[in-house]
Each structure stands twice: as C-alpha cells, then as structure tokens.
Image (cartoon, rainbow, N blue to C red):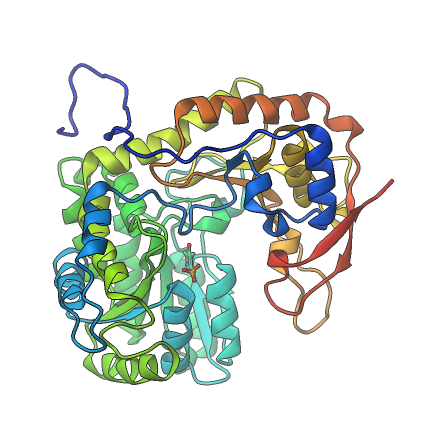
Length: 464
Ligand SMILES: *Cc1c(COP(=O)(O)O)cnc(C)c1O
C-alpha cells in the first residue's frame, strides 16, 4: 500500500494467523504466589505464569512463514555458509555498510566495538544511555556522557524528536575535554530510555557536521533504526514521499558504523551484528569475533538463524509492516489516555511508558514506584511489564548511591506480530483498574542486589 491513503482507512495487521500458541489465564491467588516467589521482579517470573507478555520486544518476534522456510535451508557449514552471504548482501543493500560480522546478539557487538574504539579514560557522548551499551562502554574504561536534548527527560513534553542530540551540549563537551578524549559519539534509534523516541534526520546531519568538524567518529546503535525511519517519514516534511528503505539507507550513510541487536527491528528471536565502512575497525572486529563468538562467517549463530535474519531485514522495511507495528503501540496509548493515566508523550515506537512517579506519587523513589506498579499489574491480570527507573539505572560508581533518573517508568513493550487488538484492550482495562485503586498501593524494599545490570535479578519484598 502507498503511504498516501486518501480514504483514511485504519491500519490492520498485514498478515493472517497460521499457527497459534495457547496462553493461560491464571487466578489472582496463583499470581500473588508467583510474583512473591519471583522476588517482585517480573524478569524472574516463569513465562508459563504470564498471560500477556509485554516484558520486552527483544527476541519475542513472530517470524513469517517465509522466515521459517528459510530455517530449513540453513547451511550449517562451519565456514562460509551460504546464509552468511545472503545476510552480508542484505546488510550492504539495506544498511549500506560494506563490512560486517555477525554476533549472537546486540551486546556482543557492543562489547567488541567498545573494546576496539575505547582507550581507558575516554568519553562517549550519546543520546541517552542504554543499559548494556553503557555497561560495555564503562567496562572498556570510558565514561558515558548524556547529550540528549532536555525535552527527553520530561515525560509530558511533546517534542516530536525527543531522541535528538543537543548540539550545544555536544560542542561544549568536546571543547571541554578535547576531541582526542572522545572515543566516539553515538546515536541510538528510537531511544528506549526516553520512551522509544526518535531523532530527526535534520538533527543527525547536524551532529554529523559537528563530528566531522572535530574529527570525531560517529556510530549508530541501529537496533531500532527502522522504527526511527518510520517516524522520520511521518513527522519530517521532506521525507514524506521517501520509502522506509531509502530513509534507513540515508540515516546509515551518516555513520562510520553500526551495531545492531537483531532481536528487535529485524523480526527474529536471536542475533546481532556489527557493520562498518572503516576497514581497520572491521579487521579488528573480525579478529575479536573469533575469540568471543565464533568464526566471522557465523558469529555465534546457526546458519538457519543467519537465514531468518537475512529474510527478516527484507520484511522489516515493508511499509505495511512497520506502520501496523507502530500504530498498534499508539492504539494502546490512545486507549490508556481515555482514563487520564499519565504516560510518556509522544507515544514511542515499541512501547507505551506509564509515568509511575505520577501514578504512585505517594511512594518515595527509594521504595521503587515503577517496580511496584509492575508487580501490581501482574497480580491484577497476569500482564507482564517491566521497570525502567531507579532499579534499571543502578548505582553511581563513585558514591555507591542509587542513581535517581528523572524518568521513573513502567514499560509495556509490544512484541512484533504477536498480539491482537483484543489483547491490548484487556491490558488497558487492567492498568485502568489499578490506576483507580492506586492510593491503596504500598512500595517495595530491595533485599538482594546483583553487581551488574541489577534490574534483571534483583529481589524485593512488599512493605506492609
Ligand atoms: C536490546 C538492545 C541492545 C542490546 O542487545 P541484546 O540483543 O539484548 O544484547 C542494545 N541497544 C539497544 C537500543 C537495544 O534495544
């Protein structure tokens, strides 16, 4: 379908369902027990105890019949699998990057690029942090510096491109520490921690100019590049008549290289890669991948996974697909707004974010309002969501105190091509019921805290 639809018809899923996976509705009693056993951490729940799973859109995608057919033509040779070459062709064709190595998922690519580009003591400015990205930058000895525009930290601000970099902040920082101390600048597509917010092509070109002026490398976390491209097409006048494929290619052309978690945009269940125009970086990456992932023609993935990934790239850029994906998320937001539930605006590309700080304003930050809200939603309906706030932010390396981000959010993330509008209606009803009864809710205390990425494994108890 073309983008300009004179009849203004609603979107619908551009597929019909061929295989179904039954899901189970449980009792409130069962769920109270389950979440207690899970230490009030939704990451520790068993998937079988979950009714509608909005924990993450990472690796939870439904593959197409075409991708499943591709799994059957997996070439499981140790070296030089034909599926690798299909994927390599598509990375060139759709991302415009001549050199690439596959990895088993995104963080493996982050590890490799951080080790290659960072010298201990360096700085890495970017448009807000992401958990695994920042951790790998820090483990390589760098300090992450947030140079996103201020609007991104304000959940009510309706700026259309809250993923933009503040050019003044970036310039000032480069002037302060000197270009030599900047390992690279990076931009992420539809910034997760800001609520799935895109950057504009205009901002990207301006950032590119600043980096070129100072001779600083510019890299792209292209995990959600396709969602970002859709927003550019929707919101940026000049791009209305360009295809998603054209926009994606133009975005990528501004960067020296990209890292990707294929578990998001690319419609598969596992995979990732690193791709670049820089031959020297490629040579190092190809060497490191052998140490950490496997030979550079499989990078920790089976041949069949490489094939599903190659075909996923072809499907992710289809307009009807990306439109239905993003409009489904928007539908959830629009329905929740009818109950006046505080949400991050504008609605993001992959998720709706509940403003837990506002919803549970009687719960202090050190009693984890967002973590609490996640547990309450689960107990009410079996819908699994996740925390994006104090628990995710971790502790300050120097003071050992909790980092208190301005955004204390619950993320309801939509797996691609998995749930229907009716699932969303049920979810909205549950959140609305909790919102109506919010004053009676009490917070949590943390009773176990792992050293790294604590949100995955931390345990809590209810405050009575
Ligand atoms: C998921 C994600 C990553 C990490 O990728 P994994 O495949 O989970 O290791 C990095 N950056 C962004 C923006 C992501 O969404």
